[in-house]
Length: 392
Figure 1 (cartoon, rainbow, N blue to C red):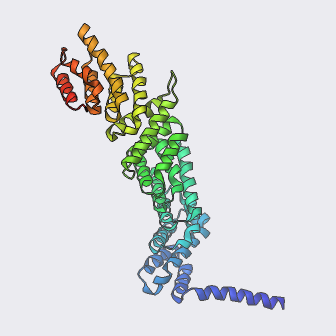
Figure 2 (cartoon, one colour; figure 1 turned 30 degrees about the horizontal axis):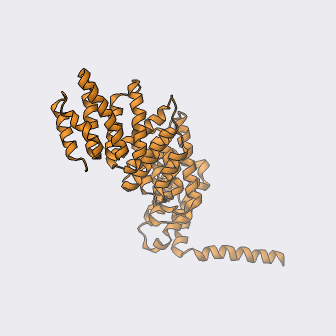
Figure 3 (cartoon, rainbow, N blue to C red; figure 1 turned 180 degrees about the vertical axis):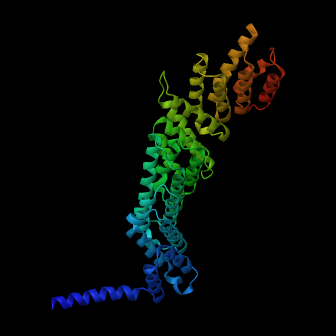
């Protein structure tokens, strides 16, 4: 009785499999299983043009992928086997047959760092949307490659590019840290550009990710996050202003006599980002930066251009407090010019123009005194223009 029951169960199982397959699919599977490797590839190619199997085409390609997995150890490098996999992978992508993802991942692990591997990755990106297992697997794979690249290992750039393309297709914001790690790893510019593009396109709170990175990560990564944010076409002017303001705040918060190169680079980059935005919320930070750079310049620790950048930021974002700081500096320059005839034309011109942009009437006397000293015509003209722009 038990034996009869087992036979009935097996019959029902196999019969159900047969019943689920269409007649055309059964026929193609039989032809495929009996054919030589080169003929198998031809059968796969021909199936795409046969309307009788069009509704089951994805399942047939999956069947071929499973055949490749079952015979991987023996036929891995056979040209006909690679051709079969290529046809099956492209077919699965074109038919959107997502039930094959597990087989595709296993095939990928066998053919990574090869042309067929990149095709498999791109296909998984197309088919794996909202599949947490595939998303995590590709994220982890790319992160491992990042670590290897940083450690000096040779990396297949085509595979990195394919990973980024797949991640972009998957469109899951859990990939933000992985793509950002690509930006930090020091890949060739084209790879970094692809990662930046993917970050721009993947839905999610990209601004918050960059803010968290600037808040928590090391200075070098804060700098990269700032650059990504300020160069973003996805973020609004307000978003970019907030990110640059935070970066300036973070760089100023860790002041010491030996400020790290990373924090210095972050501070200078934030200054350059905030100036064209005219982000007035950063006024207090701009004043702190101005005095920091003034001290560094007076000690010959930074070039003159850094000081001019700090002055320009005050002109772009400053209020009456900024005007007071610049007015005092212009007063000192006027006094030195009157007594010794010595002044730096570039710094003087930058201060006069910045005071004109701020437009605070408290700067009037200092600007007026410029006209009574032996300054060149461009500074005299800038002082007149600045006075005209003062608000009374």
